Image 1 (cartoon, chains in turn cyan, purple):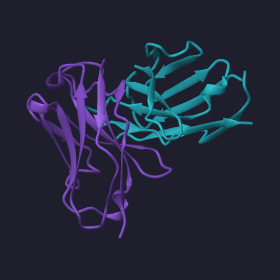
Image 2 (image 1 turned 90 degrees about the vertical axis):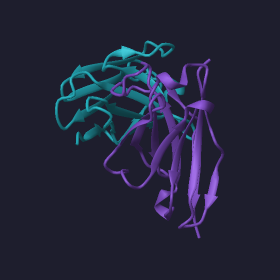
Image 3 (image 1 turned 30 degrees about the vertical axis):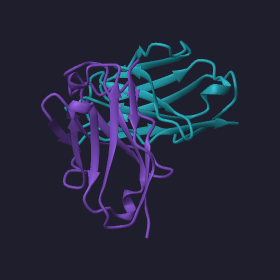
Image 4 (image 1 turned 45 degrees about the horizontal axis):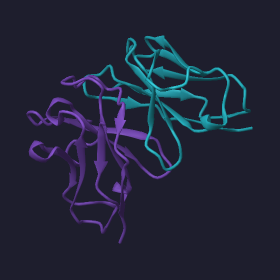
Amino acid sequence: DIQMTQSPSTLSASVGDRVTITCRASQSISSWLAWYQQKPGKAPKLLIYKASSLESGVPSRFSGSGSGTEFTLTISSLQPDDFATYYCQQYNSYSLFTFGPGTKVDIK
Amino acid sequence: EVQLVQSGAEVKKPGESLKISCKGSGYSFTSYWIGWVRQMPGKGLEWMGIIYPGDSDTRYSPSFQGQVTISADKSISTAYLQWSSLKASDTAMYYCVRPPIPGIAAAGDFDYWGQGTLVTVSS
């Protein structure tokens, strides 16, 4: 099974900060990686697919990069609406998808 | 408009059986795989399995194989997740999800999510 890790597990930041979250896979997943945002009591929302493609309707301050085993999600200028938990997910393994443990972004 | 509407919250006792549902609308239900994701209280997301309603082809995460059953009734555009004997550790929010590309099980970037069904198992 492919294992996913994320760092940091918690990130304290201020509005306007540039924020970067890292996701690592235990083996190469090419670019088959998605990023989701989840707010308390809500279903996750797809932000990025195929490592760097922005989902329709998602603000351009969100961007993704990486391939192989190391990936990043960057928020260029953190907004009040962005305080949430972020999950990466690999979909390289046919029907055996794995989520990362999550990164909580809270207010400094 | 694509929608996945899940059944309501459930409170059950250990050992009881349960079947929760996810009704798809606004798209060709038989053409897209539907998956299930578990989120235990205060924890992260876990992939459970996926079904293709067109022919009922079903794949399970090894962690959930034998613990749950995923099924679908294409006549009413509804997917199901069921337990034959619940445990307290099954207490969680369960989401159904749909990938963006029809017919492709490997399309794991889920752009549509149900609202979630909270299952509480307590004696």
